[in-house]
Image 1: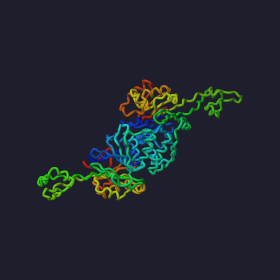
Image 2: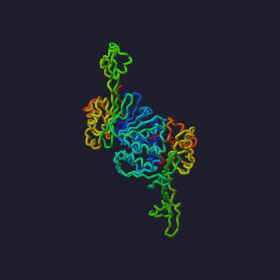
Image 3: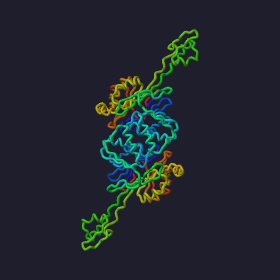
Image 4: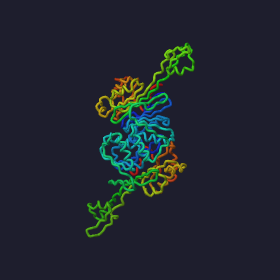
Length: 302
Length: 302
C-alpha cells in the first residue's frame, strides 16, 4: 500500500475540531510522519496509527502549527518504551528547540534521536523501494516540500518469448533489470523482445505551506497524488499573497501544471467553518481534487 | 464565582481521550490558567473557555505534559488579535524555550508577554480580592504548587446594634475593617459589639506533581478545595515513589492532614482506562474526594 492519512488539515488556529498540519505516509511496512502540529499524538490515538512503526519524521518548517506536537510525540514514544533509532529531517534550529526542552525536563529519551538538517533540495532517503527528497517551496520562513517516489520497478518477463528463445532461468533477474541476452553463439537478443515495461512508479508530493509558485509544478512533475495547501478561498487572494499562502484555485493550478493525477487540499484557515467552496473552486481548475479530511486515508496506489 | 475547570486530567501519555494537565481557575472576572499540556487550546474550544480573559498563566514545572500546549496557545492568542499583557509564572528556563520557538518562526507576538521566574515560595500575585502564592512540592525537577486564596473579607454590620448605639453611617466602612468606634464622649465601643465576623475566605490549592510529602498539608492548611495528583493506585506505591508521584490514598491522606474541605484527584497514569478504583481508595481515607473530570467545573464557593 502507498497512501497518506490526514491527521490535521487546518491552519494555525485549531477550530471546528480541525487540527494543525500532520500526515502519515504509508508505504508497505514504512510509516513516515510529515509535520506534527499540536495534538498529533492524540490524533494518532483517534485514528489508530501505529506510531512505534514510524522511523522517519519530516518537518517542513518551523511555524508552530507544523511542529508543536513533536516534543509530546517524542516524549510519548519514550514512555511507550521505544528503543529504535528515530530520524528527524527538519530545518536546523529544531534540534536546538528539542534539546532545550528535554534538557530542562532533565529527561533523556530511551532511543537514539538523529537530526538531519534541511539545507538544500535533493534526496533525503533512499530505501529499497522508495526514495524521499525535499524541494524548496516559498513561504515566510525556509520551508520544504517532500516528494515520496517509488523506485523504478523491474521489467516484467514475457514468458512466451522466454520460451521461444530458450532463455535460462538464471538470467531472468538480469532481464528484469533491463539487460540484453547474449546467446552462446554471440547473438544479442534485445531486452525489449523478452520483457514488458515495468509497472508505472507512483509518487506523493507534500507541498507544505507556500505562496502560489509555479516552480513547484516542475518539481512535482507527473506526480500521482499531490497535497497542496489551500488556506483561503479565491476572494482572499490578496491576503493569501501577503501571508504567503495559496487559494483553492491556485492549488488546483499547480496540480494541473504538474500534470498530477489527483490533488488533495488542506491547511484551511479557521475563518472557514464550511469547506464546500474549496472543493468547488479547485475543481473548476482541476477536477480530480478532494479535501484532505482528517482521519481519511488517500491511496496513492492500491 | 470561585471555581476550577479541568481541561486535562491525565499524566504524560494522552490516552482514552484524557489529556495532559491543564486547569482554569475562575474567580469573579478573573480566569487563571494553571499548567498547559499539549492540546489545551483544543480543550478550551471544546469546553468554551474564554481564553482572551486569561491574563495570568502558572506553569508548575517543565515536564512536557504540563507545558507543551503553551506555545500553541500563545500563538493562537496572537492570531486572535490579543493586545493585552500576559504574565507567565514558571520555572525560569521556560522563557528561553518560548523565545527560541518564536524566534525560529520569525514571529513576534502582538501582545506584551512577561515571564516571572518561580524561585522561592511566597506571594506571586496580590489582586483586589484574591492572592496567589506558590509553594514547593517534591518532584523529579523543581516543581511548584499554587494556592489561590481569597483575601480577608469585611466584617458584617449588625444593624440592630448600630441603631442601639447610634453609630453614624459615615463610620460603617471603618467598622467593616474592624475598627472600634469612639463616641463623642470618648467612650470606646468594641467592634465586636457592632459587627458580625466576616464571611469565611475560601481557597484552592493546586498541588502539581509530587511524591507523598506531608509538608504540603501544612502549606495548604484549611484549604477549601485541594487538587492533588494521584498518578497510581495504591498497589503501585513503589513505582509512585520511584517516579516521585503519589497514589490515590496518599493524595487523600494529604487532604485529610491539611484539613481540606474537599479533594479532587487527577494526573492518572495511562495504564488505567477505568478510574473507579481511584475514588474508592481515596474515599477510604478522605470521603470528600472526587475525580477531576475533564470538562467539569468544581466550585470552591458559589
